[in-house]
Amino acid sequence: MSRRPSDYQRICVKIGSALLVDENGLRREWLQSLCDDLKMLTDAGKEVIVVSSGSIALGRRVLGLPKGLLKLEQAQAAAAVGQIALAQAYSEILRERDLSAGQILLTLQDTEERRRYLNARETIGTLLKLKAVPIINENDSVATNEIRYGDNDRLGARVATMASADLLVLLSDIDGLYTAPPQQNPDAVFLPEVPQITPKIEAMAGSAGSAMASGGMKTKIDAGKIAQAAGTTMAICSGKVMNPLQALENGTRSTWFPAQDSPTKARKRWISGHLKPTGVVHLDNGALKAVRAGKSLLPAGITATEGAFRRGDAVQLQDTQGNDVGRGLITYDFGEAALLIGRNSTEIEAILGHPGRAEMIHRDDLVLTPDCSSDS
Ligand code: GLU
Image (tube, rainbow, N blue to C red):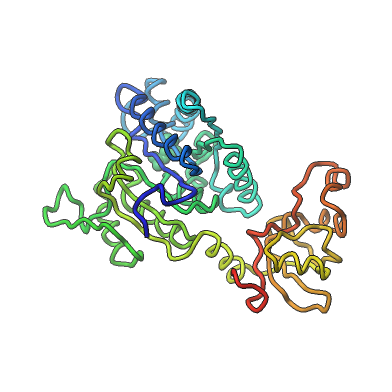
């Protein structure tokens, strides 16, 4: 496993509130130095995604709200005010570096419900294709306590895995994981690498987390679990310095949680192992050949469908003999899929009355039975 961000391709960076906002408001110079780092990565052909906290911290200062715990409605109002300022700062500072910023505000449901998850995933993917930098936060103005993440560590991990990022960097006010809270325990040992999150590691995080501010080590370990399971390597390092990603590149102290698989392999394992198919799609021989060659499944190669599947559901693929040849996440609800059977992808808009995706099942969402495929 490499400990250098530049050895990864799609990098999600989570930024904690304390790094962005202090008693004087936004720490613009620091943000400029971070954006220099993002520019360095994009210039090297990397894709970067930012999950940024700071809306509530910034908004509460603008609104003059008291110190201490805010009531839910105060936090929601603070987020509404702070998020505009935050997005504007990112947009301006990235534009000075010839980069466009695209804001996405997510709720818990957007990352947990498969259909909404697919929509968010598409938007992030399209922004990256267009060379824009997605700037993501939780939609705190509409999220209530029961339906919110509340911390951007786990949100960052869900975004990173949703976008199939191969690296997630948590920029924090602590430089990594210790066996005990370092401020209170002089014998605390720093852990440079956590190959697997064991109950022992979780116990360390539990004790460290209680001593720290919002987020803490517990949510970082939760993030590590989400990331590792989805093939995303995670790093925790201090963001207190200027140019924190450059510092990480130069080997600054940090804790790494290596992923065993690539995001694509992990995703395919999840599709084949954890999802129960809710329908069947029958392929003609041409389509079977195409998907075996690593292509997406297009409507033109489908001869029939079965079942009341919904967009994002897992479906089984069958060949002309009725053999099970694989599984995939389908792009269309069964009603729309039925209208598209055997049709050319260029006809989709005319048939459905709205522009739709060209693939019935995207190749990243397709897993062929082992004897037919070498890449799953
Ligand atoms: N979404 C929150 C905000 O932008 C931050 C959550 C966190 O501190 O992790 O203010």
